[in-house]
Image (tube, rainbow, N blue to C red; front, top):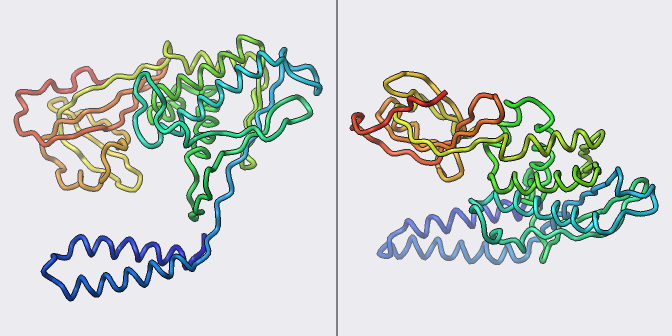
Length: 315
């Protein structure tokens, strides 16, 4: 990203905040800020910025539906690609808010993929993130589609590891998005196919169909258990940047830890109520026989301990 553009944009945002905080009667202060705002607006219009390159990926198939490097059965390819696109779309949408158990994926059109070519050797497809208009490149940032590819790869890799490793990833992923990825894997397993995913020079490959079956089974709802749970106790601390928390259940005094969910914008504010009686709502996720993972979705200061059922079922 152009450094000047980044600087001007940050200053522009700060001036807008100052204008909102400055009373109308402070005419001189507001006039000074407004003049500076107009100057920065003019500078922003003149500064050139870099358009972010769309993320590109390739999905190569192997197995029964693939006829060497010559082709792939169309019936399988159409269904498999649709399932994969559905999974990426759901994962991308889940990064900005809840998906709901059913219904349309929010802002689905914002996460479209283009098929730009075929991959030879086995057989597969080259895909590219669709951008209806150039996206400003921000240093260190990635698009939601790129994050969705990364999350899909992490989920698949974790599904071939331990229950605890998989729980770490699943606990921070929308259930519906996980189900969409599982449907893609099951489609391949049913047709005795497996695949390789390559993007941003990062690659994941299934070795065979058995690994696909294993991955699909471990991402199924029969293996992943999620439930909302109300608990009572005291926050012991929060790391705002890492968005992690520790919470002591009362009266058992057992301490649990977990992630602060996206519903809570300012995780640092929790540190203002440490060691005080609080009711919290968490999403508890368990994979197989692994330990539960907790994601904090809500908290409420509460001094009436007797009205609360206190975490006695937490394991």
